[in-house]
Image (cartoon, rainbow, N blue to C red; front, side, top):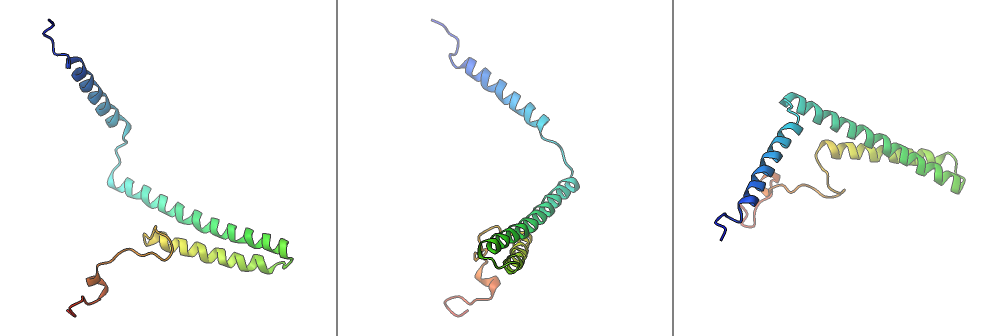
Length: 123
């Protein structure tokens, strides 16, 4: 009978894979200082806000233009939907800055003590 452990090759393979993953993870992750990481986050936040505002205005204007062509109400549909697009863009900016990534009408849950409600006992 063979006295070698039948699981020894699997353990060696596991050790090799773990070592390779560790070396790969260390080489692929760029080291960023706290300042560089925060600047990258601020840049991405700013680009997101700018894109959301511009896209909302363009979509509003395009819907207004399409309504004008369809209904023959030139230029009132374009003007009205342009301002609706601006309003929607500003709402998106407000929600992005306040961290409200949820749907419109939803709020973050806040403990009742912070809101100022009394509990059931009137305390």
